[in-house]
Image (cartoon, rainbow, N blue to C red; front, side):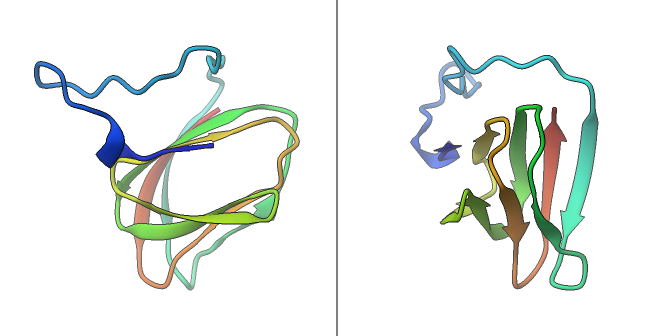
Length: 97
């Protein structure tokens, strides 16, 4: 599931992303830089993850369904969903999982 940051209204200097029902226990925090030379390859695992796009543009694939993402977008990856992120340029993003 992708929450487009551009669609989350700012309220008093903050953007509250709607996460009800999607909470996770965080066991890792990773800052990724994905480029054509350093792709984030398809895989799946038992733990859910949240990805937050810091800057750049990419295509996220969740079980084969691709969607364009950009800075400010939040991606929720459910357990056992095959996922990947690819870009033609450079994208920086955070993975919490």
